[in-house]
Image (cartoon, one colour):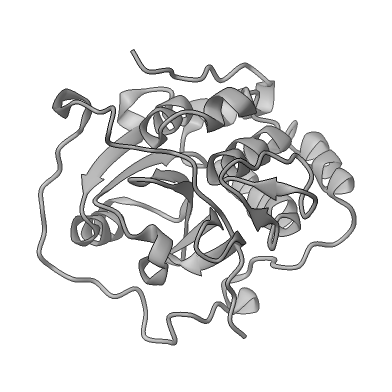
Length: 244
């Protein structure tokens, strides 16, 4: 079964960045393939994630609200986001100006997909203000500190650095003209996004997704970010970073 399910575009990334704002990384020439199977097939059972939601969206949000009080790790956050909240959004129509708060009713842009699902997870962030920022500032918003985000030039460097430095988990990724979730599962990166090419929210293997092509990637920790996870549990505000 081909899964072309997810997420969309609103953020211009590099136009407002100075060289000082970009964390340089070493450029690698090595090419790393993600796996040896059909790049367009995602077997939900094999990777242990949910594609089809059960129950209502409100019941999913309530489970997250009740569960976060006793959540003990970023893996709990990851599980709630990937298997409770996001499945309701698969197939929701993309539109550049979309900002619906109800999955599969209305349309959703890529930045709003991220900010809305995070808000519904219990992250206390202004979904409108966050979604209207460039990808760099969205990454900085979620990172909360410089050590929790990284700017990487080019897909070849990204492949090497993800393989070398990043563990399984859920991350934010900002591209030249797009944003979404980077989900690493069993060392394979997936892109969960409101897809402006397929016109809907979907999940794809990242390095085979046309919308994932970019000259620059800003990757911010989410489930591996201890401060963000503490703010999730406590309800403390996550302030939106704005251009200086």
